[in-house]
Amino acid sequence: MAANMDENMKKVFEALKANHFDPVEFVEDAEAAKNKILELIPDGTNLGIAGSTTVSQIDGLREELIKRGSKGPDASMLGERTLEDLMRIPHDMILTSSNAVTMDGKLVNVDGTGNRVSSMIFGPEKVVLIIGRNKIVRDVHEAIKRIKSVIAPFHARALQHDTPCAKTGICADCKSTERVCNVTTIIDKKPTYTDIAIVLVNEDLGLGWDPDWEEDRREKIGSVYLAQVQRLIDDFNPPEE
Ligand code: SF4
Image (cartoon, rainbow, N blue to C red; front, side, top):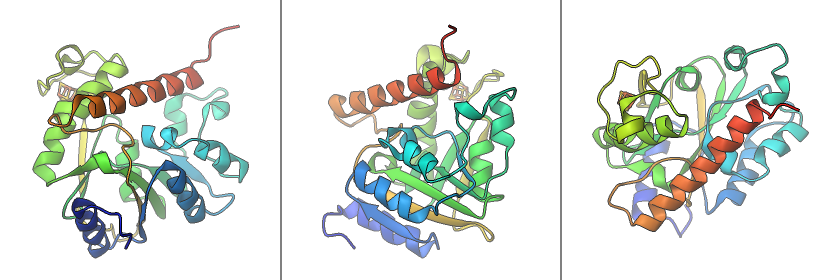
């Protein structure tokens, strides 16, 4: 175990291993995470990258995976297909993140479409999750609270969804057809037929913070997230010539 893990990270690391996620790795930063992920994903893998700004935040990872022959969906595969078509393509392996990880090693996620959370549970043989230190929460209750009070409103606003939280920042348990949190999953332990590898990163990655954290840290997480969302939107909607 790395000496520079703080107490919370150590607890999460051990709890994830006890819950049969394997391997569980700890790395110091995004660059080390990239190298570890490239070790975990064999060349030429039929790989799906399921809606994750964490993955997009790791410089050069997507490009390196494509160079090595991974066949993950990206804008170049669209052709006559819609983004929804791409989401339905089966994959042997999925690379994504988790909205939250609890101190006792549970993975908590909320999805609008469900493609990301379903593929984490059954379908692909292997799942690789990159989880930044900012995703650690005390327990499932805190995970859901953070998702509904921070992650979903911020995400809905970034994507300009017509939901109450996008306007007010507060969840109204809405009935909007553009609701971003239709499916909630709690992965208590490794699902029977799916291997889940986890790379814990000692850096803030992806969306999620505790409202009590200092403003600078929260703002940095938010602005990096917004930049990545914009990049993904631009990739899939290139300006007309
Ligand atoms: S239920 Fe509706 S209002 Fe609440 S967080 Fe989800 S999308 Fe926003």
